[in-house]
Image 1 (cartoon, rainbow, N blue to C red):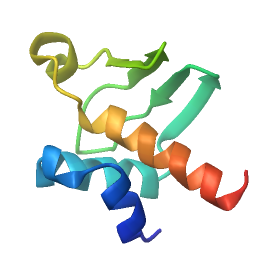
Image 2 (tube, helix red, strand yellow):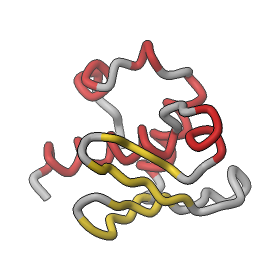
Image 3 (cartoon, helix red, strand yellow):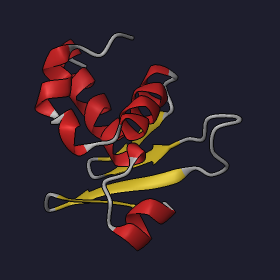
Image 4 (cartoon, helix red, strand yellow):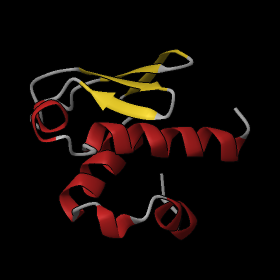
Amino acid sequence: MVITMEIEVKFKPEIYSRNVLAKARKLVRLNKIEQLDSNTWIVNKIRGYNHNTYIVTNKNGIWECNCQANRQEGKECSHIVAVKIYLNKISEEGY
């Protein structure tokens, strides 16, 4: 899958590190995102990349992930960014 410039601009890549964006894109490209309900997603692990599966939620516009970077540092992690890219891809493709 090719991530278009429109998606990158929409998500303001300047606020994310290259590593976060690269991992998020890889998660989407490898179909590691599963939607559980309208506000909850599972982000499955990438073999050899990370060891855990994470839960991403969006409650009233507040994004959270149970990964260490988000819980301890409050950073918008690659898992959250991956879900945002995934949601944009779905809306663009009409799924």
